[in-house]
Image (cartoon, rainbow over the protein chains, first blue to last red):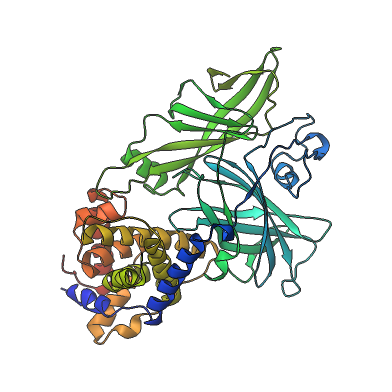
Length: 351
Length: 157
């Protein structure tokens, strides 16, 4: 019989470099200094108000700014709709426009729309000469954001980019938070990577990999406040075989709702194979219809993603709760004018 | 928090944090980065822990979270982590055991590290890794079974 005491003996010999100690303490001291100088903090710009016309992808921005909503809307809605919808993006649109240098080129995080549990992020990648691509290559970018504290992170994998006239590749994706609200956090870029794949398919080729830890601080922005932009929380209950929802946050781009009953950890484990970690996702079928005062209806979605959330309890030894948080992304943006109800499957929720 | 307090916290817990990080990601550079990230978080956290056990458990839980995120990213890049710590072994038996543990899937490796390497009880590991005690026991059972397959004989419970 092998004595596992040997493992403990080997483990006891494992230590990090001696210089790690000074490095981390110096970094922490430096961060403390920065915190004491509020003017040095990079605060994201909150726009006063802006409107977007989606029809024909014409972007009409109310105030002069660098905010680029178009990449987000192009990504999600493209030419799927001919309707024109105006939205109020006050307090949720952030013009970030910060860049970081990678071996393969420059990554610029352009902008974000932020709801309490989701961030619609757009970013560009301008390749340099050492990252050759063919014209028919499809580029995929993975991007992650970590809170400055490192406590939470958001990540999305292999988002396909579109090449712009300027030669840069444009990406947009929803980063969903199953664990905690996005408000009040400062985010830095974390684990961004880029791959290319021939348009006909095949294995991806990864470019030089992610940022080093020191470079990760290159992009920082703070989410000071979020709202249910343009719309509101709904009162109602949704009873399905999947969930019993109590919380609805409706935006022009989608609906978030949370299972009121929580989830049985054993069932979550069986379904996702991963208990308590926010990357666990399952797909559920939902039909969502918007009903208007003139009795017309708009079909909004028939699929959604679901994240298993885990309400972190700061006291490790107390029970925490598990549950499902659903993110329905609409196939077409929601028109808000004259909206009277949202129907999810067979349940009508007055608006 | 002042420098002396930071140094005291680091000196007390850095080995355990680093060991858990290394056992999970098997790469010295990644383990050091994670160790620094975790302590940075601790040093900027305005919180007093009721006792050392809870503080250590919190640090290890942060470490596990960071490791899982990192491993996910590595997996996406199809990168193979290195086993950088083999040279720490002195005898052949130590090398055999170290390599056998290194060959386990990450979640089993983590349980083995926390149970055998750090000496935590099953209930404590369950709290740190957000799992039930039954799940931890199952992982330890499977880890021992895999170790037996690799080493050709049982390991001590």
